[in-house]
Image 1 (cartoon, rainbow, N blue to C red):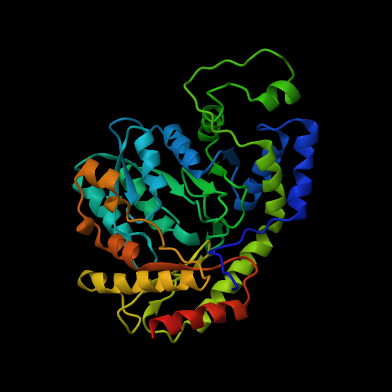
Image 2 (cartoon, one colour):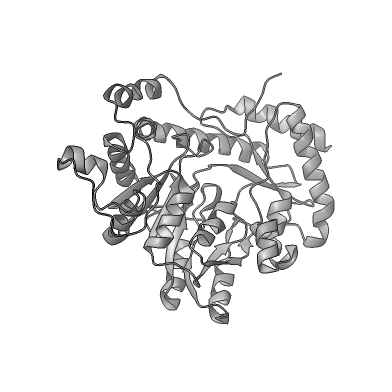
Length: 395
């Protein structure tokens, strides 16, 4: 039976060869390959600083700390996102204030962001807009609202390598952003993350925080400046360093980024064309002026006529979605729900006394979204086979 994974990283001999360098040199921790990876990433995104970390979650954590977020602060977070977005806020001792999403884009509803700020129940200090599945959040509106209410902005760009608004790449809006290199992301280092910012002070603080709070990295001490004495530690830091093995893979992956992104967009276009007449499945919406990176191809189960569902329709449709996903799995076709409605997860639900229906669009997206297989070299024939299976099961 032919299997269709939810994604397929583009890894090969080039990555294997790249690992020889750090293995033979013995420099396995954060070093010259990480520095080169950071430089390539900063240039591609279009920022002054890119700081590599162990993963996107740690990049979010350090980004919040560098922006001054701490105990007692409140941070707006979309409810439909991976749990790591909210967890990073909790790590700082701050409180995530959930906001519902726009169901057409799966991104944070900027009108509701404004409402939260106006209420002023918990003075909001920052916002984490998530550019979900590879589609940039409405960053221009978020910057405008944040400016009026004095909010710091940390974009969760985990999925957003290749996403743009006009000619501007995700991760370039104030104050900082965090990217992921998990295997489901367009480029991968296995695990790994990157904080991007044009604020040199933020970048400097994150570089120190990721390395136990050290005033100088191992690379600076041993290679660039020389010296055998340990550095000074003027702040409490963390061990969030990317290894040079990962950095070496990242350098190779950057050279493949255009091919990977082009292939994913081609695959998404195949789905768009072949699903156009399927009335009960809504395909990804891309607002004018935005470029989708298609980290995932996430659809939404519809009651028919490409109409967005209501809450009262959700239970029946959820049963159909779950049955469809289970049957596709039996045929070797991997699917996933888009991501969580975080406010429905036990930790947050209990801690903050939340109800499932508090954020209805996030709840609908949680119960009715379905990601279909998408990878850099998926063919039109493969997409056609997947869709035929979908149609047979549902009808």
